[in-house]
Length: 144
Image (cartoon, rainbow, N blue to C red):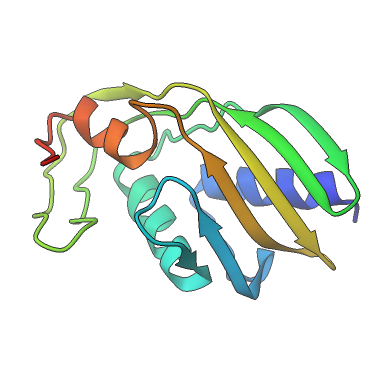
């Protein structure tokens, strides 16, 4: 399986709510829009929470470029929070379904593939993007 196919399959699985740990190396790291890098389990927990609360989650992935073991992608995430979103940070209560839609500004992902698995994901998130941007659009007050 080629690198692009590995990345596209993992993203499609997330959008379908069928997130598979086997798509990621055991030492996978996700960084960028989070205060501290996430290991595979924390990343999978985050994605399960986000997609579980917004079953219509869509990356709108485009502009794929492959160079060696790296895949570059542009995404613009959208969704509707129709189910409870578990508290994502310490002290953040669960957010009951709001029915609100969110549309995040474009982000750029750099994804490294090792073997047939994703080993690293780095997101460059503009202001108003990422999880903080989604929470703001859902009406969650964020402290600065």
